[in-house]
Length: 394
Image 1: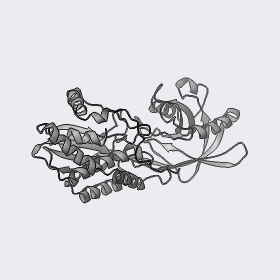
Image 2: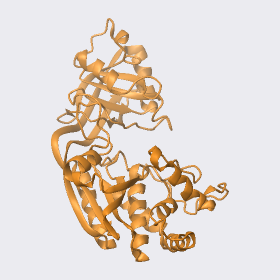
Image 3: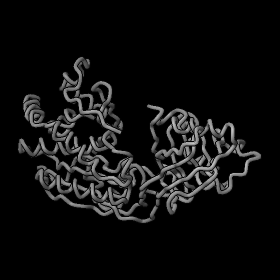
């Protein structure tokens, strides 16, 4: 959802169309996309894994980011800025480096991604590695994988989620599974690593590897059957951690009614797209409202959520744990007061300037009326985005 639309939906319909459009124009002129961009990049400074990033549920990196967001809300001048403590399962992923000798005998080191499971070594530890296709039960027939690392291909969109082959390997006694994305998610580039939530026990260890690095290993395994590798890893799940949702508001004329604007600040990798840019856009909207000194009809509550990507171990329902705890534990009194929640997710569009909006059916007509009043938003995208950030170095 773009910031133009956010400006429309929270302007009171009791005012005339002209008044609303004039106020919207003032707000739009006060938006500073450079401010939001810089803030999104600043959030990348906090990371658990020095090489890959990661700012995960209950981690020190997530805590430090929350402190930065709280300070930013206070600097902007939001009212009643606070930290709401919520309980989630936490995950710290500090490293996962796989070493092996290639066909020339040279030692190679590759970075692995990780899933929310436990696996800690005391420096590089030697294992045997085997490749077992898609990791289905039939692939294990006649193979002893006890204490070994199992490499598999997985397509999480068209076949099954990562926890199925991981748990299969766990039941067969494997020490850990390493998954390469054969399609579905993470197929953007042969060197890309994948990161998703895992719905399974934390002792069923799992990592991800790029297709490029997996191809080298599969070539070696095609001849040898299994090969020695060394894994240096530190990934830990800790149950019942305290993390914090950060909130601030612009008081409205009707304090018993509020509109929530939300975005999550935990992330995989650098998190610029998912979801630094959304947090930064949300605060950019708050900044614009404060700049024009606009008092809304309904209180606007800005909420930076923790633990969206993952936050519950060994569960099928582990997304948005921070948001769930905010409503059901930290602020159950919000029920009945919130007339809408505008949640921002993945707004840094790579291609074009159009975004997707999803809503409950009760708001469909209202959303359509907002865009009818704002016809320029329906115009065909003919101009490139005004800001082109520099390419990230990896």
